[in-house]
Amino acid sequence: MRNILLKFSRIFVGALFIFSGLIKANDPLGFGYKLQEYFEVFHLNFLSGMATGIAILLCTLEIVLGALLLLGFWSKKVAWGLLLLIIFFTLLTFISAAFKVVTSCGCFGDAIPLTPWQSFTKDLILLALIIIIFLNKNLIQPLFKKEATQRNITIVVTVVSLGFGLYTYNVLPIIDFLPYKVGAHIPSLMVIPPGEKPDEFEILYHLKNKKTKEEKDMSDKDYLKTEIWKDNNWEIIGEPAKRLVKKGFEPKIKDLNITDASGTDYTKELIENPYYNLIFVAYDLHATNEAAIGKLNALALNATQQFNIRTVLLTSNSAQDAQAFIKKNNLFSEVFFADAVPLKSMVRANPGILLMKNGVVINKWHYHNLPTFDQLSRKYFDK
Image (cartoon, rainbow, N blue to C red; front, side, top):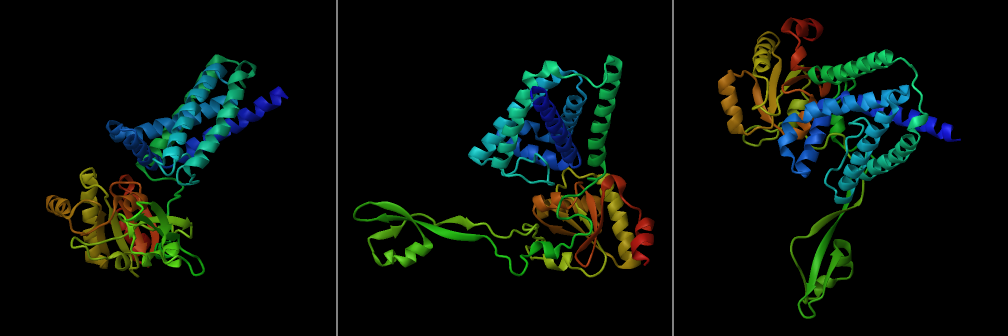
């Protein structure tokens, strides 16, 4: 029975660590954004600039520990590593859940979103299984006895894991779990389908009785139903609060709002363009790759002159910053503005490109693998 429990724990924990590491390594930039949230909460902002590098290393560590556990290599060291890691993550997810500081732990990236309490429950289960592994670590036998073989296999696993994270960071996620993935119809992802209901809220009033000094909270429905508003002794104190009563259907894209420098909304016009259009995304102009911007500029010029393709640059910077950037780089594209959060989800690059037509994401690229104008022409525009 003891051996069966140990074997199950090893397989479950090892497989889950590998799966979790691979899912996050598929999108290390996204995991880095999540780490930045934690750094901000715990006042570790000096680590924010290293968030993506730390994300890649953490993913590699998860995969390697999971693989070594399944292979049975260096069982004592691996058991200690797993125990320390899961204690740390259990405390972290508990703090996130109890104090509502981070709404999603990012344990499985955007592939399997978990609430803070779900993440904490998952870590408690893992903690129990890892304790079983730790207490029985001396019973674990390696799949290969020779130390040289163990060392070589570990090196290969580490290099492949690290290389995978570096590749997806420098190209794009191999599997895109975000709403702006290739083939997605953006307009339909921004609306609530017929038959579905939105979130249901109630308004809470804080009331105080002028005579008795009694205070109480009351919903807007009860406020009207009891007709307490007719009693002049009761007055509303402060601003009414809004509380979620029932969770409704939530569109996958709910925060995309594209405007020009004066604040005019261009969201519908840009994302529903019935013709091919190129959208360059540079959420942070201060940190964008300017060499890539030069290539995008040349691409925009050729596409517009030869095929009348509309090209726009989306950024979250201020209009003043954008104007200075346009002047410095002789930018040809139109410039529009949106919040950084949806821009980071559009493409995991700064800058990156989306090719869209009639609201559909036809393709997308990282600035490291930008297509040439001839490639775009042959595959899309000439047809």
